[in-house]
Figure 1 (spheres, rainbow, N blue to C red):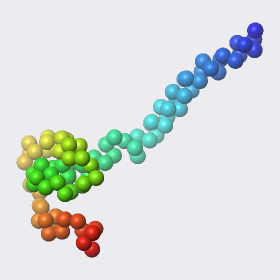
Figure 2: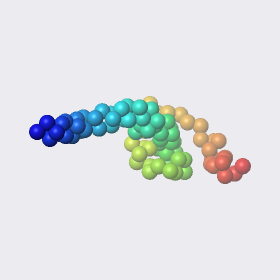
Figure 3: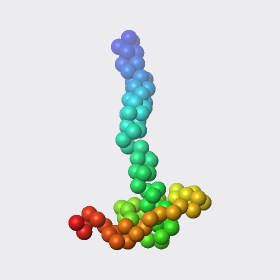
Figure 4: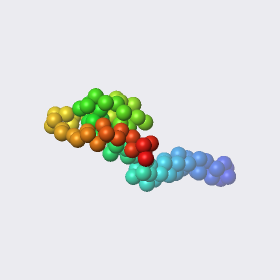
Length: 95
């Protein structure tokens, strides 16, 4: 009877062990794999898209993801310099 009882102790602890391991993985990966890790590029390009109605900047992401958070910045009426981007819209390809 003792062997049967010892067998189920690790089985009962396994979900708790897996939960602790999962929580540690999540905790240590927040800095590099966060949902907002690419916010530094979405927010300014969303502001640019809404102010100029030019959709060429940051083509990797859909416009809604960029423009929805940038709607809050339009309240402050941001002034952006678009002359450099108009002269050379993609400096990587033109050099």
